[in-house]
Image 1 (cartoon, rainbow, N blue to C red):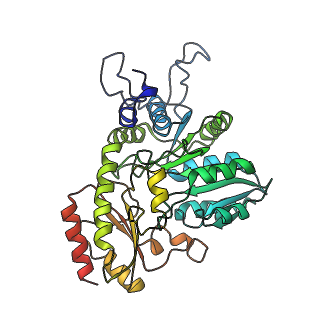
Image 2: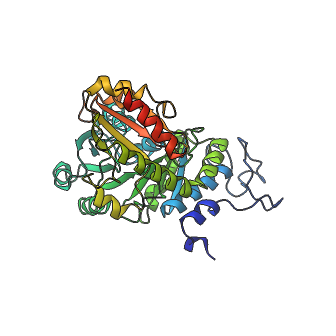
Image 3: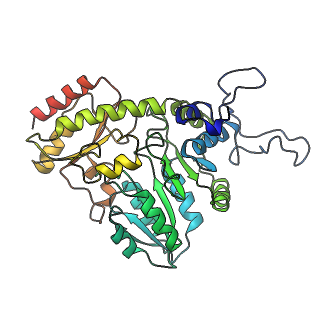
Length: 387
């Protein structure tokens, strides 16, 4: 059968992962090389000249990324922010305007506000789950990018990708969706109309907390942009290393089954947390009480492994909870097989304090791993008992 016709889990395992034709090795070799012998000056073998410009292991991952998201081309970078930077630097010039969600990863907001702001790019922060607010924030002719993160980080807001894509198309604005929290196993922004999808491959795609990486996937119709960003990738050089690319590809092969377990565990924990006297609010789209539940159920095939909670005791209780768990280890990042707890106000989102994207001090974020759910529930119960 043609791989293009294969279902998600099959594409995750086989796209870009053809066996080695020389030895028959099932797993393609890792090409730990910086340069390539030429057959005469300019006689490149399969286009490879220097590994900043291209490397077979990175090419395999980029093929895999495009197949996962249903795009026409994927690009792999040294980090998620490197991917974001390459895209924005290619698209924007001084005087341009960006519309960005008011609940996005702190590093994304910092990049737009401080790096591109210093370059003369303006931005407006809005709740992207409010279509009227987004429509009002777009400046015709000046707004070049609509940046959407759904589910958002850390308050798990759900934005309507299809509606925002339609709005962006009408206004001539590039619609970029950060699909890191959902992963392509649960959500397909390209199929919903997004122009570009961005990932921190450090998270669910790699899935084992042992690499740092980022990726972009371009929808059909964005071939020219993909070529331009590919040039920026080459010229600026923030590419993923061959070994990081290999580890990411290996992680992707189990993405589908991991996301099922992440989602099952997270839903069980969210239900346990909801209604607890020490918990003011549970932010998880799998709960029917979540305002975006019905939309998430339509545009996602599962609700993911990320939960945030607001504690009734405010900052003091949030800190105590975050420092009281055992299996949930206190650390930044997310999406690995192990469970993590994070205090966004002073960790992942410290850079946005005092801005429109500031995270309340009462909020704690959980990255629910794939451990036995009863053990995770016991860990949560013990931490709650210390409040």
